[in-house]
Image 1: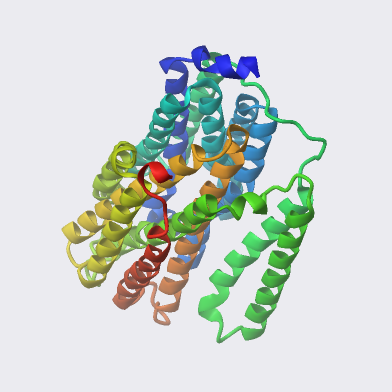
Image 2: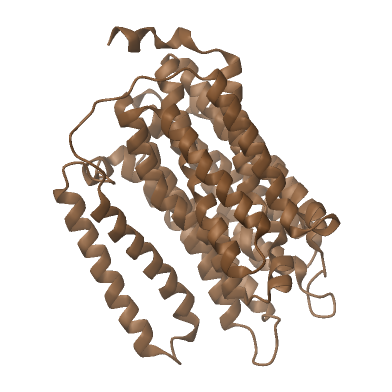
Length: 465
C-alpha cells in the first residue's frame, strides 16, 4: 500500500508523453479505412454492405479484447499487458499492409482491433502513477491525442493510398505504433499489480460474447434481404437470443466475469455506457455516409471526390474532434459532466437533422461533420473521464473498458445499419444508392440521439458527481 501511495512521484511528462504518442499512433492506424473506404471498395470489388463490414470488424475485435485487457491490466499491471497488446496490433497492421485481398485484410483488421484496449490500460498506468488531479489531466491528454491521431490518419490516408498504394497507408502508422510502444516500454516504470484472485480468464463469457457480437453483425447485414431470406434471418435472431441469454447467465455466475454485470448495474456506469453507445451510433452514421456521398459521381447527385479529396474534406471534422477533448475537460471541471454532455448531445441532434435537409453542397457536409465530431468528442471524453475517476482505482480498467466497449459497439452498429440502408436503397442493376437513403440515415440517427436526452437529464452535476 505504501508503494501505491508513493506512485505519483515516479513518472513525469516524458512518460505521459510516451503514452500520448502511442495513443496518437493507434488513433491514426484506426482511422485510415474511413476516408479510403470508397477506394478500397473499388480495388477489392466490395459491395456497400461488405464495406460496412470492413469498417467495423476492427471495432468488433476491440469490443471483445477491451474488457479482457482492462481486467488483466487491473490484475497484472497495465504496462505488462499494454506492451503485449501492442505486439498483436503491430502484427495486425503488417498483415493489413501486405493483404492482397479482402479476406486477408479482414484478418489484419481483426488483429488491429486489439488497439482499442490500449486506452483503459493507459488510464490504469496514469492512475497508478499520478495523484487524482493530475490523472484527470493526463487522461484528457491521452484521449485527446487518440482523437488527434484519428485526424492525422484521416488526412494522410488518402494521399498515401493514391500516391503510393493502399498497402502503405497501413504500414506507416504501424511503424509509428511500434516506435511508440518501445518508447513506453523504456520510459514507463512497472506499475504494481492490483488485487489478485485465483479465478482465471472467463473464457466461456468471452466465447459467448464473441458469438453474440458476430451474430448481431450478421443480422444487421442480412436485414436488407429479409424478404428474400426470412428463414435465415429468423434463425439468426434465435441464435442471437440464445447467445445473449447464455452470456448473461454465465457472467452472473462467474467468479471473475469478463464483464462484471454488478459494476455495469451502477447508475454512474450504465448511464455512461448507454449514452456513449447512442452518441457513437449517431456519429458512426455520419462517419460512414458522408464519404460515401462525397464519392458518388457528379453525374448522379454526388461530388465525385477521390480518397485524397475526401481526406481533406473530412479534416475540419478531425480538427474539431481533437479540440473537443480539452474543451470537454475544461467544461466538465467548471460546469459538470451533465452540462457538457447535454451541450454535445443537442449539438449532434441539430447537425444530423440539418444534414437531413441540406447535403447538396460541400460546405453542408463539412460543417455538419465538424459539428458532429465536436459533439462526439465533448460527450465521450466527459463520459470516459467521469467513469475513470468515479470508481475505485482497482476498477479503473474494467469500468473504462465497459464504456469503450459500448463506444465501439455504437460505431459498429451505426456503420452496419448505414451499409445495410444503402444496399437496400440501391436500385437493381445500379451501384449507386438512391439519394433518399442518405437523408433517411441522417434523420434516423438524429431521432435516436434525441432519445438519449432522457438519460442525460438524470446525470449528476457539479460536485454532486
